[in-house]
Length: 402
Image (cartoon, rainbow, N blue to C red; front, side):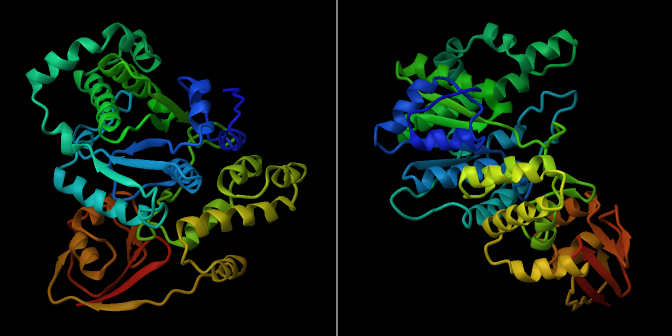
């Protein structure tokens, strides 16, 4: 959207493609011009053991707002993750066990702790919506909140109306997700005086419901601001390669492969991605526009790759990565691991330290990221009963001795 802000912070964020929609742009602008600390929240459902490149834009936004003195709440959907955020596609997300959800939360939290500040005056407040949603009594909730939600408005939302026009299945579960996310905003407003929800543009309908619920229940105004989905010049979501998802966790994707992903982005995407993921002045970044389609644009790609990789993997050796990339090789030291008896492949991965849990091991195998003696594996229960070389991705190897 074409917004103009008085706040220098919002103005810069807007020019760097961080702002897509706002429920009340003028009121949000006043919030950030007031000089007061703004408490805002973002949320994610722990559907995997790692966040991916698609989440990186909101992580950077938290980082920028936090550096400007504002206070973030990061909500993990321990409760909503049990039912899954509706994809608004023809198939619903796979249901996860709560043990898997807890494992995913722990893994993601470890990585987030290196990307945003969990200490200081404006430290991140980390919350799990299972703390309050699991305590709701259904009849009490219907009595107290049911009348505050408009089915007419839900049916009019683009994500719903399109499905209805196509006569595609809509489940009661999907409508409940909207209600639960709205209740999250109300809880955070009443508990922490959170006045702003930030989320991806695909969460816009859910965010509007939250803003409406707070106003109807308390008479107070809160706001929503969406960020654009991270897409490439062809309009496709970024974060997928032929090898699979571009994860932020180095256990699932090495810093070398992560750097290579950004080094190889489409020329047409470089300037926009530099504005989002580097701190270079905007006018300096714009100078690279004239090099699109020419070899000189590779200099910008390296700046981009260095910036994103150093943010996500601060201990990575960028010089070594670039030397390996330029030579076309990547030297890997292979550790030997002795196992005492035959066991299934998922257990071997956990035993060797190539996966944190059997659940993560199964996910790696199902994603096509595990090889035994150079052959991609698709069965987690394959019995490993002889010595072999096991690899995860391109840089993790273990010589298994039996």
